[in-house]
Image 1 (spheres, rainbow, N blue to C red):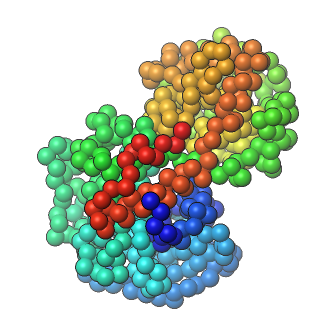
Image 2: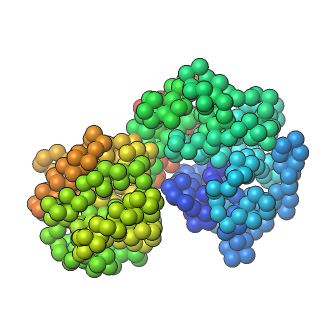
Image 3: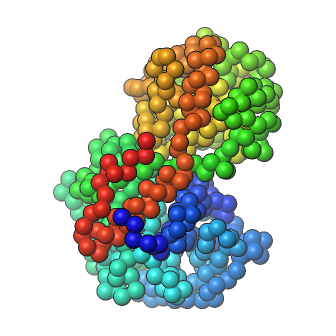
Length: 501
């Protein structure tokens, strides 16, 4: 299958450590580096937001100014490069769209901003004289690149043989805009893309993600189960007819962890270090976490950790329905960290006052505290209603916290349900309701009181091989698959050929 090293242009609106709001930035930081280690020349381009200071970060200007076609005219952009050796990272400069903004999203002109960023990224490759074999697009922000390569760039010799791969991280965020965005993007002659099975409301707007789905050579999601789920009306967010039309080109790829970045044997955020062969040292991490959170320091009580946005999607509707009975009737303590919907802030504040020493709520996000929660909790809870991929359950398993998850998306793919005697790496529950969640917690707590069984489950979890290297190998193969489809129309892979077990 290998066709030698390829040029891969990786487009993401975020990347750690420069600009981040969530999992997209984590994947963009880890995956391209792992792919580059396999030999492909992969390069990342993101916008230079106002929070990215060239002088402080030692960025180097590589293109002073270059023209970008934009709404029947041109806008001028610049290009900076990070002082990295492991991965080339470039930054599109445009003062009005990016340099003057301290945030990343939630501006009224986000559609224009990301249309410009994507088009500027393609033009930057041209001005660098670096022709991509494959453009890897992520989320709605970059979804017009596949559309352009089949329209306005169709006869451009520079991109004539360039294939596209489009990754859906979360189908719920589609980039919905009006007809005006087509004019700005230079594709108004196409008009809206109507589909007989799509709701009229979606046929009369521009779904950026929908256009990526239609025009990309290969589609991927962040887990195999999510790739199956989004083919259904329940999970398809109105785009399931488009996805069913293209399901032969849709692949689910589990996104793994950078094992050097996430390693309890070396993590400086932990008060002590441990590994799968030396789990006794982990008890000190638990005691320190209990003390830090203001909980009673008890080793015989199951400590449950949770780090998530406070929202229904993350399962707080069913969690808050049973959290007080859990605290009253089960020998547990809970540490919950996250911000989000105000009603959940109020409920958790109230329960924290009612159960001092047993429940700790941190209404924020702090990565170092998150690492200590992974490294000190006995149980890690992810009751998400929907979870396309998920990284937290992988981090928890890596750090010896046994996960309890709702059987959906990437959670279903990565957590193996415990069956006696000592198989499995955690606990899955379904259906999605409070009683099923409570029953899963009660069962886990019962087994926690049997140390030999619990230790075996912990070790199973820690030994799971969900590394970013496996993810990189899958994409290494998918890039060649996309290129073969683009140039010859012949597929190289089927979904079962990407087995990541």
